[in-house]
Image (cartoon, rainbow, N blue to C red; front, side, top):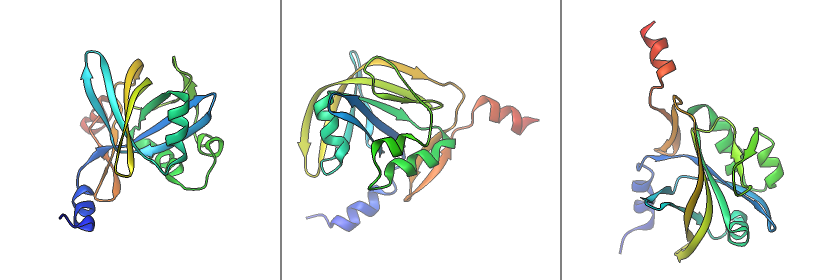
Length: 170
């Protein structure tokens, strides 16, 4: 049997993009910070997102049937922290930034590196989490932004955008 704390320590060194997952619809508005989101296939465009079953966002996504994965740019660490704070309402979380929408109505973060607007196709329960399999209905991409990753239990800037590269060379 694997020791849980050893597993968690090892997983802390698995670098992952930081995203805000949002949902909006008849069941209400919700959002949380995640690092467990990735592509499944590009034909049809599908991604998966893992969300703790104890998160209020989980139930709202289930009921709304939509979500948006907002992949954070390096300058959006404060947004990640706001959405990771327990006890805040969705409206209080959203107040830290500007938002729009694409096709599903789920909030799309202005300035995010990219946003994947999705309909939930299916969900599976695995341990403490729900794995949502999502069909991507729209994508917004901001070329030239540095990304934000979580590694070693902290946030880190990754990548060098074209603008930053020009600054470095000047």
